[in-house]
Amino acid sequence: MSTISEPAAPAQPQTRPEPELPSIPEIWEAPSQGTQWCDCGKDHPLTRDAVLRAASFLRGQQPEHLTHSQVCRITMELWNYVEVCPFFHMAVDDAACRCHGEKAERYPFETGLAIVKRFSDRWNGCPEEQLCRGGFGWEGPAA
Image (cartoon, rainbow, N blue to C red):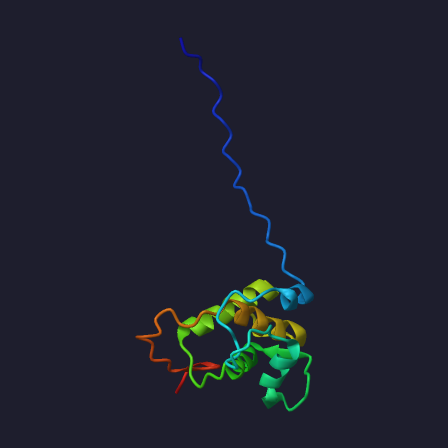
């Protein structure tokens, strides 16, 4: 014999807590899990000084903020890329999300440098390298 019971209340959607962003020092201390960023043949960690050297277009200035395009440009300079592909931009966007919480128009200067580090720690190159034609600069598709 079955009994009639009150309908169950609709389940409340469960929200996942936002992942905590790593601190800037944690990003710089993280080990590399991607392709070696330097082609000198030595396995050495990426330093803040190396990222600053790649930002030579800043001429030694350390502005309060870096734009997303400047972060992409520093990353391209560090990796000696003349052109990149959409996968490069997706990887920079992902690094921005993991360091800043979201891709933004601009970032605090130290966060921008940390985005370059995070990208470099995870980058394994274009997954379609054999077919990829590049065609993108630091601001997106090359004109």
